[in-house]
Image (cartoon, each protein chain N blue to C red):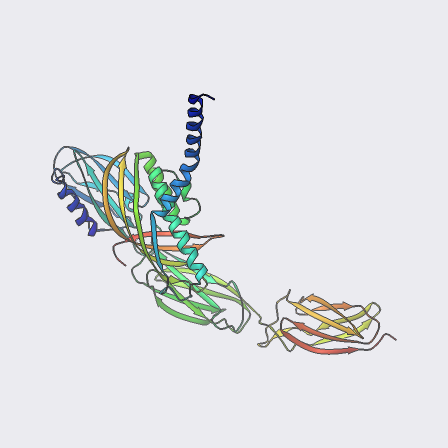
Length: 284
Length: 176
C-alpha cells in the first residue's frame, strides 16, 4: 500500500500520470493466474519484476494483462510497469499457497539414553513452489520406539516455524521422530545408545605373555549394552611402574593383554566412570 | 626526459592506479551503502552468542551488497557464497531473465532494520525479519523506467555454512 501511494505521489507530482493507468491485484496466491487492468489506448511495453522473474512484453493499453501462474510461483513482492510515452508502475504481493512439504530438522542423530532436553526438532512448512508458509498451522511431533509412543506434542507454527525439545528415551535402539501436518509427514530416525557404563567390573588371569584382563559385559545404569567401540582404559601398577592400555568394547566386552611378571594391581575406567580394582600375583 | 614524455608517464601511472583502485573503491562504496541494524534479543529458543551475532551482521550485509551487484550488473558471480538453496535459485533466475530482457535493477541507499525471531535449539537455522528501505531503480537498456523509494518486509532464513552464514530463503511479505 505504501508503495502504491508513493508511486502515485511521485508521478502526480511530476505530471506524468494520466497517460495510462494500471490496476494490480491486492494480493495473489502463488501459482495462480492474475490480471492487471490498464487504461488508455495504443501499444505499450509491460514489465514484470519479482522474485525469479524479470520479463518484458508488448501490450495494448485499455486491455487486461494476464499474468500466468508460472510467472507467479514465487512468493514475494512484484512490480508491474507499463511504459508508452511515460511509465507507470505498481506493486503487489504474491503469498504462499497451502503447505505441500515439511522441512524437518532433528538433532542429534545419535543420543545417549535418559538425557534431559537432548533431542530437538524444527519443522518449516513450504508450499509446492518452495515458498515458506507463514499462515499459522499446527504441526504434530511424535517420537516412537517400536510401537510405543515416547513423546507427542502439537505445536502451532509461529512465523513459519514450529519446534520441540524433549529428553531421550530409556532404551537403546532406533527411535522414529515424525512431524506431521494434515496429510504431510516427515520422518527422521534417531539412534539412542547406552549412556555411560555403570558398575564396571573386570576379571583377569596371568598367562604366558603377561596378564589378560577383560570386563564383564558393560551396561549403562538402565541395563543397555554399551556400544561397541567405547574405549575402556586398563591401568596396571607394578611396583613403581605404571602402564595403561586402552581397549575398545567389542560385543559388550573390552579385553587387554598387559605385560608384566611381578605382582600387579589393575584398575579400569571408561570416561569418568571407575570400576573395580584387581590384584594379580607374581608369575611363579 | 622531455616534458611530453614525463606527462605521458605520469598519465599512464595514474591510469594504471585508477584501474587497480576502481574495483576496491567500488566494493567499498557498495558495501558502505548497505546499512544494517541488527537486534537478536528476541531470537530464541537458543541464545545468540556474540560471535554469531557479529557473523550474521557481516554476512547479511554482504549478501545484500552481493545481491545488489548481481542485479545491477546482471552477473551471477556475486551470488556465489552469500546465498544457497531457494534464495540462490530465484536470484540466479532473475539475473538470467534480466540478461535476456535487458533489464537491470539498482538498490540504492539500503537501510535494513533486522530482528531475529527464531534461532533453532541446535543453532542450525535462524529466522530474521527485515524491514528494508531503499530506492529501487529499474532500467531497460540503460533508460530508467521506474524509480521509487520503498519499504519492504522480508522474512529471511539463514543457515550456517562452512565459514559463514548464508541466506537460504528470502521472501517479501505484506506485513510481519
